[in-house]
Length: 283
Image (cartoon, rainbow, N blue to C red):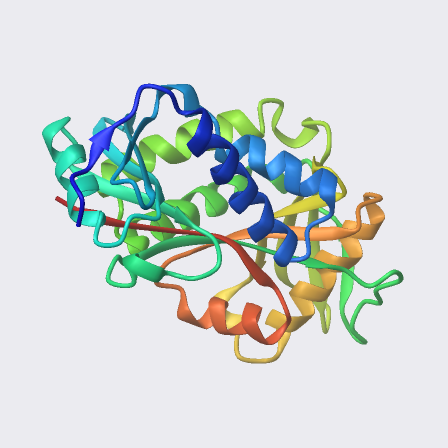
């Protein structure tokens, strides 16, 4: 392997990197406006990244603060056997763990545990609710109890994914809920649902219309534990599709945490493709 050297002019690398990111999103079925919007998210802070090359490929790395921890990020890696250099660079800059965002497979990072995925699928033009399932708006009186349950479940999911401690997960939860629901139940663009069957509420849904161009984001499609194993998981996904069209969007997107193999299997079987996969290791 040739010697790896940091470059001052990132222009040559950046054009190829952005095109590779776009190609991954297009291959996953994203519209051009959506692919461009996702690219903007993927390159956030790019001017502060460090880029290196061995003459055959590229490495892009950076460090950031995340919930009190210094985190290294490998943003790009096309240098054969360049991962060791990238991890060493992150460690030398104080990183306690290394994160990667992947499209199109794990590649050199197959041994990094999966911490989460963003998934997406175009929805049917006129999705129908499953027979016997009812959907109604969650009431404002029901919202506080729903919020408490969602927060607890979110913290548990973060901890199970293995990236943060319970204390860090609580801090992240507080920040995320404040960012996405600044006006609580009345936050514009957000809709909350109660799903019912046989006269009982069997779960809830929370979606954000217009999250990205043509996309409704499903923050939560939750079937209560006592009603699981009865086919309601697939029914909840149908509710998500229905809600997406109710908001005027064409595709549904959501995040699933690492370690939730049951959910990942359900999403595989219902055609939700992986847009981004997030993996990390502790140093």
